[in-house]
Length: 77
Image 1 (cartoon, rainbow, N blue to C red):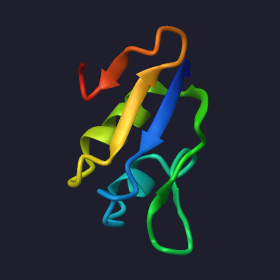
Image 2: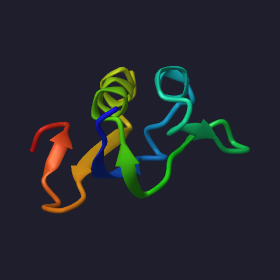
Image 3: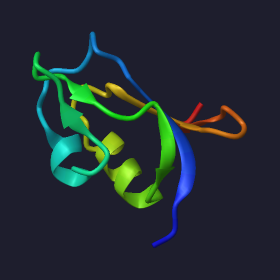
Image 4: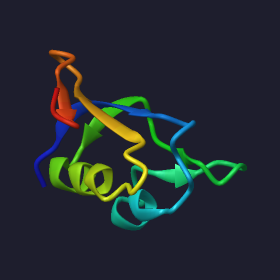
């Protein structure tokens, strides 16, 4: 499985805890005690699972950045 290094930011003000990210990528996303999404700040993740989770977020609360360049991967900059 191909991985690529990304940075993930979650806008906690936008997150409503719908759970799509956890359903699509349970090894990457989880919930905190408030029912909001958590993810490691940076790491090597399967790109398609990560992007599917971010794109599936109904609140658009997940920002995915290329860890090397800092460019926005999703949503595109």
